[in-house]
Image 1 (tube, rainbow, N blue to C red):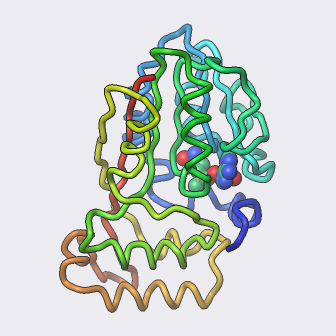
Image 2: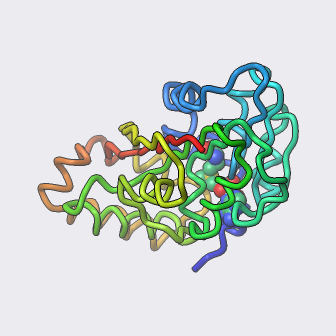
Length: 243
Ligand SMILES: C[S@@+](CC[C@H](N)C(=O)[O-])C[C@H]1O[C@@H](n2cnc3c(N)ncnc32)[C@H](O)[C@@H]1O
């Protein structure tokens, strides 16, 4: 497996243009609203990357801390948060109960979930909110092909997620008021395939997988072959829970 550090070092420069969802203002706003963070809140953005989620909170809450392992991604996060801390989500250098809200978009697929979910729980204050947003397959019908595409797209990925996987873990961790919010985003394969970190042979493999997709996958993902591009309606799940 490729290391996430290497993948994001290669991808950092193009990251903010590397998918439609990356700068989707409606999705970013939704994550902000679900966190319910007021002006006195201290918010942690786990796997902050170039700071696009942190930036939505910055200036509206008391303090925003970003956490990531990639200094290359962080170079583009200037002005998006109060402080950035370099550490893995599996071992956060924060005291118990430090944060009113912990948010994370598209970070947990790279984490050891057996360690990262307990860490998120630990660093939240009692009554604090977790908002964890990630791409998933729709159901068993598209699962195999969705995961095969994800594997070629990002060889550093360690978790392939179904819609209720994270919320299930949050429940088992002792979170309450756990809910899943679905969000569908239309993505251009030509756009995300050009992210600077996908080898040429993987690009061919990804396009071949879309061409071989069965009818059910094409229906669920609303796959369209148009103008030399492939469009895919991808599913995000936002798991929200209270400690
Ligand atoms: C797809 S980016 C998401 C960035 C940002 N959250 C966003 O929504 O735009 C994934 C980020 O996770 C970081 N990452 C990967 N493994 C990590 C780990 N174990 N702990 C913390 N961050 C990690 C990567 O460096 C990268 O910046």
